[in-house]
Image 1 (cartoon, rainbow, N blue to C red):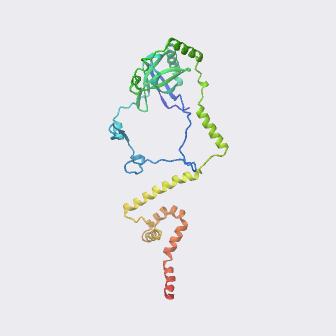
Image 2 (cartoon, rainbow, N blue to C red; image 1 turned 90 degrees about the vertical axis):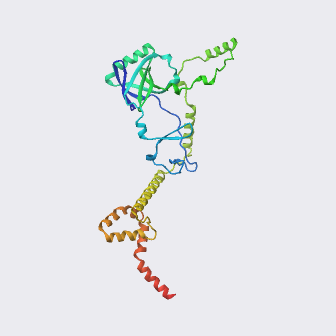
Image 3 (cartoon, rainbow, N blue to C red; image 1 turned 180 degrees about the horizontal axis):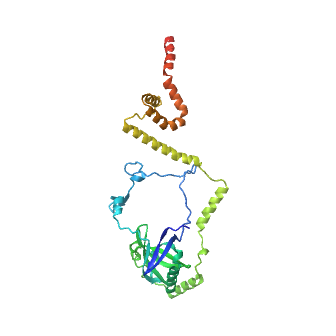
Length: 329
C-alpha cells in the first residue's frame, strides 16, 4: 500500500513523523456507457456550449457561476493569489471528549502509520487518547487547502478523520419541530421498548453484505459463461484514435501551408507530384526535404502514387495516342 501523504503530528513540543493511508475503498459496482449494438464505449468531447467547437485542454479554465447565472472566469493567476497551505503538519489544537463531536461532521478517514524512528511518541499519543477517551481536534493541509480533522484510535492505530466545516452541515431546525404535538402513550412506549430489547445486539460489520453488488457480479458471470458478450476488437478502438489524430495532423498541415501561401491541394490530378518534381530540379535542399516529409505518405499510398505518377509522366504518350483517334474521326 502506498502512502498518499507524509508529514508529522505535532502536539505541544512532541513531533511524530507519520505516513497517511486511505482507510476506506469503494467497492461499488462501476458501469460504463456503451453502444447497445456492438458494446463499444461511448466517448465524449469537450464542446463549447456557445460556438459548438471542441475545446482543447489548454483553453479550459475554471468558471464560477453567480446566483444571477453569470459566469466569472478564473485564471491560474487568480488562484495564485488565494490563501493556500503547503505545511506537512497535523497540528493538534485541543483534546475533547469523544462524545462531543457529532459523527455528522466526519468526512474521509485515513490511517496514520509512524516512521520507524517515531514509534514511541506515536504509542504515547495513541494510549493517551484511548485512556482519556478523547479525540484530538487538529488542522491539516491536504492538497493546499486547510481542513479540520480529528485523531482517534481504532484497533491499535491512530485514525485521522477530516471534518466538514460548520456551514457545510445543514441545520435540522429547517424541518421544524417534528412531532411537537404528538406524544406516545405509556402502552405504546412499553411495546416499543420490548421490541428494542428483542432486537438488541452488538454491531458486527461482517453480518452485513452488499446484496446488490453480489447480484450484479453473479449476473455478469452468468452472461460471460453463456457467451453473451460483445468484445470490440482492440485494434478497431485504437484505430479510431489514430484516425482522429491523423485528421488533426492533416488540419495542422493545411493551416501551415496556408500561412506560407502554398497550395493545400494534394490533388487527384497529380498537382502535388508535379510541384515536388519541379522543386527537386530547382534545389537539392528542397529535394531532400521532400523525400523526408513524404516518405511515410508514399509508403502508405504506394498504389495511388504510381497512378498519379503515371498520369503526369505519360502525358505526352497519351497525347500521341489521342492524335490518331482524331484523324480516324
